[in-house]
Image (cartoon, rainbow, N blue to C red; front, side, top):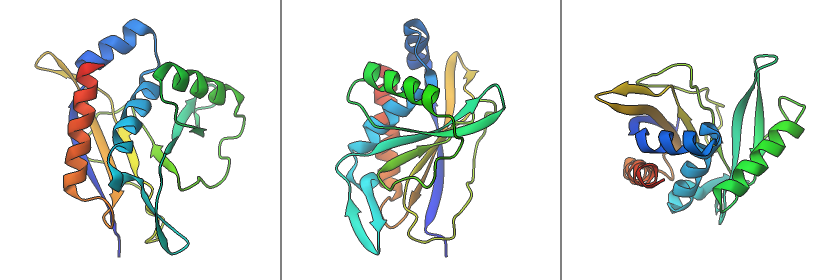
Length: 184
C-alpha cells in the first residue's frame, strides 16, 4: 500500500556549524548542497518512476521549503544544483529573492526535496503521503540542532521509495554526510 519509508538519524554538525557560521553562509542551503552532493553519489537515490518506467537521472537538482518571515508562509524554491557551494548559495539567494509565488506548481522528478524544520528537535518525523505508489522523489528533513555532551547534534530524516532505496543505502548516505560534515 505504501512503498515509501522514513528513517531518522542523528548527525554531529559541530564542525560544519562552526565553519558555516565563520563563513557567514546559510546553514539551510549549505546543508542542502552537502546532502545533495552526497546523495548524488549513491545511484539508488537517483532512480525515479516516470510514466510507468524506471528512469535513472544523471543529475538531481533541489527543491527546498523556505520561510518568508514577513508572512510566515513557506515558498517551495527550486534551485539547480551547482558543483561549488559558493555558486549554489548565490543561485539559491537569487531564486529566493526573485520568487514571489509560494507554490509554483508540481515539482519535476529530477529533484531532491528538502523540508527543514529548525524550530523543533525530534526523534522521528512522518510525511504526508500522496497516495501514488510511483511517487519516488526522496525527501530530506532536519530539525533543530541541540548540544549534547559538547557536540551539536542534528536530527536528520530521509524518506525514500523502497523500490529503489534500502536501509543499506540510507546508511551509506548517513555515513557520507557525516564524513562531509566533519571535513567541511
